[in-house]
Length: 632
Ligand code: PRX
Image (cartoon, rainbow, N blue to C red; front, side, top):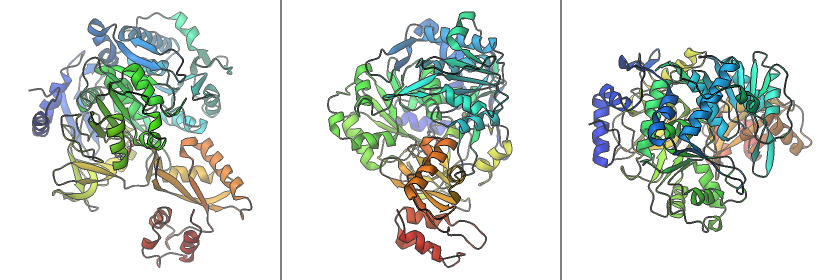
């Protein structure tokens, strides 16, 4: 049995057992479903100490042949990308598989014409327009490595990522529309490129028509370039282990790292999880509300759905424009069958009240999903009742940028679900809970550190340009395991519930930031001597950012000082990293060796003042009293 498509709990159990008993045979059977120019020599070679993981090595393929060409004879006229614009009155676009293939080939030829070669890194900074999907696939078509940077990041963040990846090409747009506003995009790239002299070419797609500056010899318009190319672009033959993309994500250090995924394993795993977790059926309309700038958009707007030959809805706008009913209106308009969003969106729309939901039938929905952060029980039940009408299974999917695809989730209507539990590992995924000392906890009904003891096909291969960092971050804390950075609970029957990060990472509205990264940004403000940042529970965002700041000089106008600090964070990282609370303090609780006691700061931010623990070992215990008294 190939277990390609799991349809019952018994099949899930059998597939899971088989995937552990013989992972090579299990994944080889999944990989058989794709177009390979040449089959692999070995299914899996691995060693978590180096780390070195190779899936399907020796195999030759191009992922775009599997996303596009493979479907042309059977699904050529089927809609691949169904684009809903920001403006509800604007026309939606239905891009068929044939048209997408054509556009990707043309774009790929434009890339070649502009000097992009196999292996080159290409930075993509674009809003949620179809051209973004085309650009990503065009890179993959010619074997260039895409590095998509979320279009809400600042110029400085773009520059950091371009420099780290040593990218000589940038794909962008003139501007973007979000809600009632036009926002410049090219101008942000221009600013970034002042510190990136290595960028040779910028290709600009028109979206808003707003005026932009084009630098002679460096910047070209996409609509002019397409006039010079045809739609014939054979796919580059890639090794299964050639890099497909880099995606930057935050960890506990100050500098985001470039997570590298490769062609073969990522293809097999995103397709497998897309079809099985969501129980996708031919002709379902699938809508993932993430931005392509995050891993969720890579894996479940672009690659997973297109590999499965699905119709993937891509939405340019925001959930609250023109009002908080927009998601529900779009679901009815396009008869969406599978809807995949984030707890923060659910909570914020829940807070707006049912008046925004009730006008819509939502009767097309079959499966609803959640991703990015723990979903609290209240939001889970609201989602189940008011959006799913008690008729749709909920899949709470746990995974990470580094995992490439969903690792723990129920399969819609096939395995059981339990509120706030991601529940069951996907076949091939072997999670364990560890004690702080790294000992495996074998019993059920326990909590521990979540680690994975065996590779799955889309596991991170390296961090771009710094393999040692990959080893240290993920494979050195507990020898022989991939360490996730999350804590989890396992119930008496073996379902997993993700509790949250156990490292210095904060998850704000499903976006990941390192506390050190935000502190570095705050410290760039001239008002600041030193800062410490912690997360605290936030009703809508999941976690909010609480910053303790030692000011440069006594603060006479706290509002102005806060505004200045927020502006600095916006400039260094982007508006999504702005602290929710900034408390000015005269000192930080430090040990005699100078280490900040974040535990205390966390407790104060969480308003758990009764459990601060022992503060006697601090350099200056009085500081705790001051911080506690002035808590925001
Ligand atoms: O803490 C977990 C949380 O998001 C982290 C991964 O963030 P990122 O790489 O940005 O990817 C987000 C989208 C895949 C995890 O370490 N997380 C993600 N999904 C869930 C979750 N926490 C609880 N439940 C989830 N379903």
